[in-house]
Image (tube, rainbow, N blue to C red; front, side, top):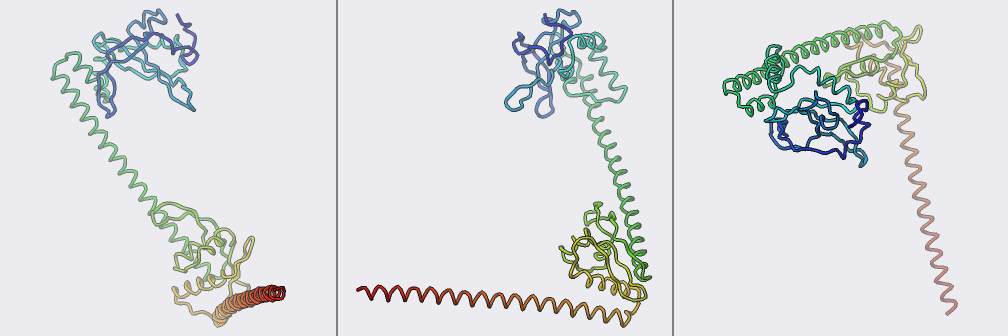
Length: 346
């Protein structure tokens, strides 16, 4: 006999004697199958009268080529078939299991039939194994058809309830999206008005909707650029999100400056001026002479930078070509000297 205060995980169970029993179980396709299984008698290892018709099958799982006890499947023998009652974890002790089985109100085949009556009264699920056991037990076809219909109706009710839950979830999600869109529209309108009022704009993090109506975080000014169809390069978009802190009108001037963290951007000023121009055009506000001059100056500055880069590239290319020509001449000279030396020795 095994000590009843031991947990199943603490017992040496692999060498226990098994007995072949006819059992009803769930098949691979969620159907009911009847087959023979090798089970261990709880009565034989404990001597407890309450466990006389109860058996178990060990449930192991592999981890790094080692077998670990996950628990066991508990069966009750109705004399004509064994019913898989439950899966029990390996942390339970024999003493706890004995007490649980003693208090189980649905022992024996008649107890199982009473369980089905109570499940139906409480609108609970009845599985295919329970119906198969009724068939195997020789119950009349009318009762079996009744439980088959109940099971089908249960699935239909559950599907209808799930569809209703989905509908409510989708309605709430659509309402959330609608409210977010209203919130974003107001935020953009307020920010654009602040720009028109020459106020300081903090580039805070905001939550917006992407193309798939998913909520994602971005910066206010990057979102403003996109809403105004200003094509900011990806690299600069990253800089706007991570480094740009604010934009603000210079005191007494119609000209925006910006503050940032880390390294500066060489192109952001152009996009800020384009943003201001776009917003003013939307509101039928003409750019001031100074703003036009500033924009032209920025464009000329960028053209100058691009020209310098182009000149530097051409210079570097020419230098590389000259160096190549010199190296080729050196090699040719070395070959000629070698040929001359060889002839001299002949």
